[in-house]
Image (tube, rainbow, N blue to C red; front, side, top):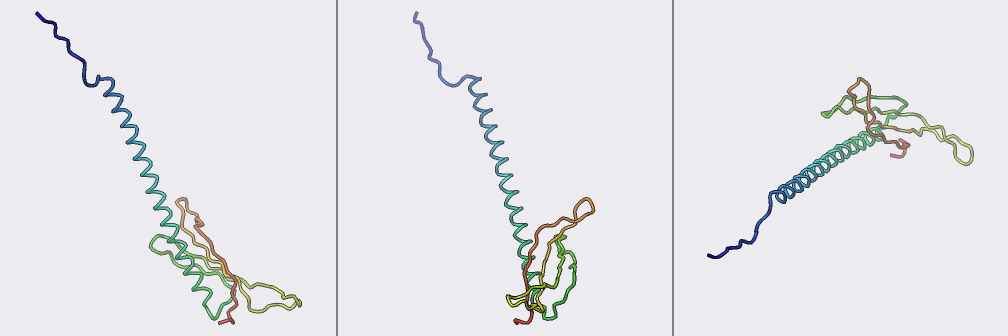
Length: 134
């Protein structure tokens, strides 16, 4: 009679469980990272859209030939964003102490109604305008 000696081959149950647990942790971490990246990209796109709309409103307000001191609010767009346009007169003097007439500051603020009844400021842009230059 011969003794047959078998060599162990393969993985033990403990080794398989450890490798599966490690893979599960790595997969969950990867899923969370991908989720964070997609949320960041989505927020960046939203902010860029607000900036484009803000610049368009600022450009439209500054091209008004009958610019006068006033505050306007535009109706909300599809995303619930509305714009407040404030035009104020600037009182500046040149180096000879002469007042510069017909010079305005135009400030456009992008706002959104918040969940709690107030308004949330998203972004703001401002420029000085001299309407007689055009």
